[in-house]
Amino acid sequence: MNDPLPETAIAGISDLPEIEAIVEAAYRPYVARMGLLPGPMRDDYAAHVAAGRLRVLRDGQGLAGLLVLIPEATHMLLDNIAIAPRAQGRGYGRLLLDCAEAEARRQGFGVIRLYTHVTMVENVAIYRKRGYAETHRAEVNGLQRVYMEKPLP
Image (cartoon, rainbow, N blue to C red; front, top):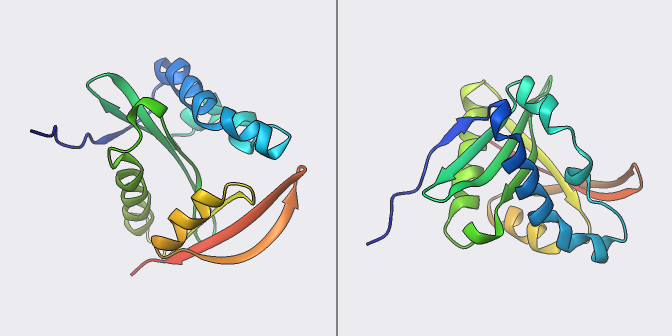
């Protein structure tokens, strides 16, 4: 029998070591492909935790994933979503995307936006399947980004 999907919770400062470990494990494989550190590996997760922008997903083995949401003036920014390699393939990414979209709606936003690196083609395909459309591409801090958005009914 499958265990029920876990729920998200606002991250606390004590979660930082596990958060940073998930980010490292989830994004390290992209370093060789990109030739530099991905944006999420450069981020200040203590600041996200302090601002209440970081949610974590726990399963029976500990922290399984994370989600960073940043309310902007006109939209919700899905800044980061990462799943621990040990927890991939269990539907946790879909659960976190559902959580991001629900939170954006709850806060009154009609649009959710995100960006990913152009070499992360798997992510672009996942987001397209979820209804996100590419709006533009740009270079930021040496990173070639694909920007996407989704209207929220």
